[in-house]
Length: 115
Length: 114
Image 1 (cartoon, each protein chain N blue to C red):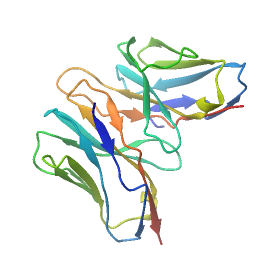
Image 2: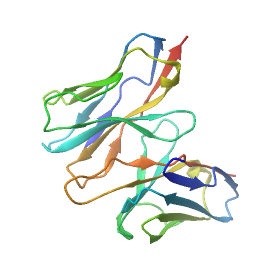
Image 3: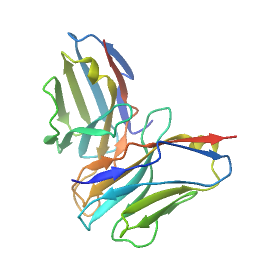
């Protein structure tokens, strides 16, 4: 049990498909994140949700659509993706606000391949 | 903009030996946090150690310690008594103050030889 669970672990989709990535955190945190990890590049922050409100959209193309129905769940809806979107997508959570901000806790990621 | 640089794409260490991974960062801020994360083949990013910039004392977690040189903007990770399970990608990360987002370096792949 990692505290942050991502499903599916692997996903292969065509460019015309619609799919969703799911993330669930069991840590009682109030902030959740989507990161994209491509080969030989630093992790790229995509979206941040704080208390279910989106506080960051790091110039992500509209073919990626996040959804945060509550502070424990985060989705990334995918549609009409491009092959260059193939990457490892990592979800993370943290506790924000107050005197102490926790480090980010990550899930195991979803390996996405766009064909 | 803040940047994090890891100049060693790959490193190798003999089991039981010590290895140091380098990290430098660029910022004009005085209040920030630095982190080292480990990413084994399981892909989960695991926090190894963190350092608050206002603390002069170097952080230590068991076999892991850092050499934090604030003036030089350097934050290296030392792994003592290396174990096979230490083999992983190691990422250095920077966070501005208490509200900023994490900025990662490109990572260093560490191999441990038996």
